[in-house]
Length: 261
Picture: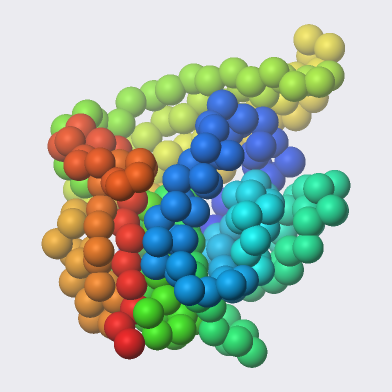
């Protein structure tokens, strides 16, 4: 299966991304994630953190406010542009890199890395998933901690993806998004067609479509991919501190892993 370019997928969505996900309590989610990271980095004064697939950088500002030295990387130039605007408005000293992190070679290694909003699920081939975990391991220091989430196979298969229509209001315009899914059981993926309509003063200002191909995973394969790269899964489940056991109906789950010494 051909790997879809994530930068192309999000190029049109980027200006509306924060509006679409404004209902998520990112500040609370980040606080919980920081609790997990701090537990493994208690002796590190100013931990270096790399946000893989950082998107528009909302989490990064919270990490920075908590005392982390933050670098965000995303191969979508449109997303990085939004992240830089947001960091400047918050007077946050965050470094941003437009690059595919699978081939990123920084001058330093990091104490921690995060990969949030199901970034892993946008990597759909076995070869690329292997590279994903290998890249993370290379980027981390020994004992470095990695926290990430992805789509969870049992939840996807039990609930069966359905067509969803959502509307969002912002100052001066509204966004309507219709998500139409199609499951490939052969590839363990769901192709979700996003149809967006932007309205201003009651009239359609623009409309476009993007196809998002996401892979769902099962615990044994995540464990195997991680261990092959020298990363040990220390906990997994629903986002909380500590992580809560994930019921089979869960669509998305979190993992905490640590690099071998």
